[in-house]
Image (cartoon, rainbow, N blue to C red):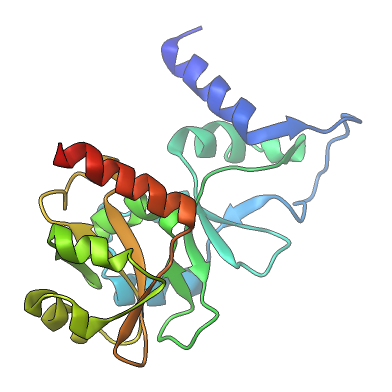
Length: 216
């Protein structure tokens, strides 16, 4: 078995479990992953400035039986060896991919916000609603669930106040193109002059740990 085959096998083991009764379904199950429709993606392309050339639109999927609350990013190996080959007809997919976009529950120009879980696959291709911040401003973004924009530096204030209400991302200066470090935060520009972070405490702890390691 080649290294590539071994890698695919490991990914697929983490991604699904087999049906216990071994039966095959000839129709799409409610839990199967299906491509995201053009109607969903077109507004996101414009809003976030996603580039057609490099953004992997074909690697985003939704659950067939759901109401498309989450757009999942799926690795090429999983797409090729599980989804494209119809393996979903034989197994129940438990978990695959990362949350790339999540449906908004707040008023916004588009229906989906960028999800922290898969932001490192989205942010590199965003040409809109992405700003960089110095270390002080970056840390301030994580200091509380809601932060007044006036508390940031003049440069950050100017960039943020140009944005309309909704989802945006902030990258740490010096790491704008080093997305493997995951020093990027998903935020929400509120109607009031505030921003809210859209990250879990575990994600915040992880980002702070990375900041401490690069500051040494």
